[in-house]
Length: 302
Image: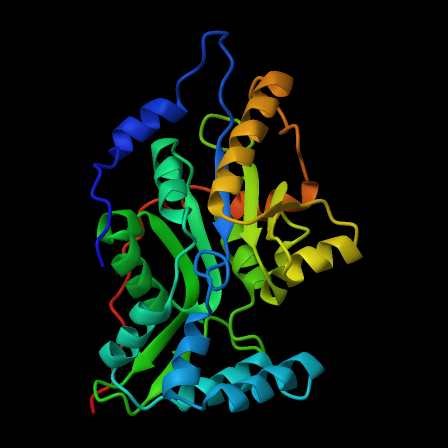
């Protein structure tokens, strides 16, 4: 799949920008983005594409999804059955995803905007990291993909495809408890950026799996017409609807200008949510690095 090969800024160039002040002497506040993956960056769910085409099939998958919703079975239990229904090599499974997945039409330009403005972009997902990384490498190119940190479950996949087994981040019914990931990182992270300013935390999502994060950001973006937006309306949570990442980029620009005008980058963000402190700690340089080396997918011998 062709990708835009426009040169990306070096880390030193980005650091020069974030440390600079404008003509009035005010400091531009750092912005940090956290985002869901399935249904947000990509319009489809990566797991659903695999299960429906190569695994248990759409009818069984929908039945299993309903068991999660009703509480009959845990997310982890159901997910293990879904992933266990796959018996194809990883590369064969990826071919289906490459043909089926559609990236938000404005995500690549938005991510370049983040890189150019030294805005760390982090994916937090209940999916499998090897799949998400391969998808990003293919659709964005490895250079851009490498600048996205992924917090997700790992996987053990047999070379012959006979086993697809999630390696869960947490030993609980969720498998990956996003809130717990935040708490784990908090111990070694700081509330403030290196220059003493308090960053603005942005979360971008679309559905039910994003509900725990809905109250934990300074600025929340919910894809228009989907479950996260419904939840925000039902619970009187402030949010900004979006159709594509172009809407998000436009709003972030506006919010950044608003914050600079009201605070000059000092003290609390103009749109400050105390509950977002958890995300601020996760976003520290030690907890969520801009460039994160990852181990290759674990593969079992056939």
